[in-house]
Every structure is written in structure tokens, then in C-alpha cells.
Image (cartoon, rainbow, N blue to C red):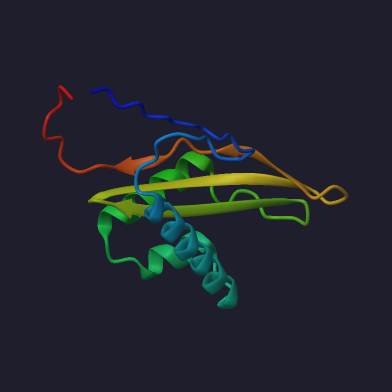
Length: 132
């Protein structure tokens, strides 16, 4: 006896690429944590990179933050009313990643555009099987 299965796909207009996506909660949690880190850095009037480095104990995370900041040229330019700079880092299953971005804001329209971002700096730990 044959069974017939019906599968439907309902597309949506999303700014994110659709498809399979691993560690969805990790992404949301990292976004929330990194947003809080920026707010705390602002409260104590400290550079976001400096604040993170001062409060991190994990040397691998410090290394990826410093690598991303160096590749980006972190600190060479200051934010203005229409241009801003951000840095963030995260970890998942023993791997560490960091990136920096420069964004421009068109005040009249409210449009935000990513001007540039560093290629991510990452440290994945020991390579167990280099063939895969």
C-alpha cells in the first residue's frame, strides 16, 4: 500500500537567507549578549573592543577579537551621526569567532547599509580530520 505525502513551502520576505540553519538559538543568544556588551561599554565610556578584552578570560576569544580588530583597522575612525562601527564575538561548541563592521545610516530614509566588514577571524580548535 502506497502512502502519499504532501509537502508545501511557503516563502516569506526575510532579510535572512532561508534554508537549513544550525544553532539558531546560539545566534540569537550571541546577538543579545553582544548587544548588552556594547551597552555596558557605553555606560562606562569604554571602547567596545577594550571593554571585551578587559573582561574576557578566554585567551582564544581574545586572540580572535584582536585579529578581527587588526584586520579591520579598529579605532582608526570614530563613529559619527551617520556612520558607526561595531565589533562582536561568539562561541559555539569550542570554536571562537569575531568580526567588525562599518555601517552607514541614511537619516532621512532610515536605511542602514553595511559599508564593510572584516573577513571573520575564527579559531576552531584542533583539526581532527583534515580530509573532511
